[in-house]
Image (cartoon, rainbow, N blue to C red):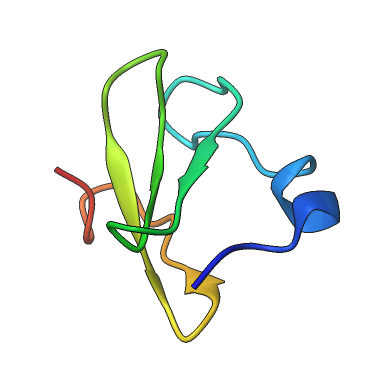
Length: 54
């Protein structure tokens, strides 16, 4: 599921503050700044550091 583009424009990586990239095929948001990925479940991103990112 893809994130609304307006919402995506407001989100940043909580670890490094870089903009996030939506990756609907893998159901996650990717941070090109630090390489973390944040899972998206039912259209809701989990941006908790130490949570679902890898």
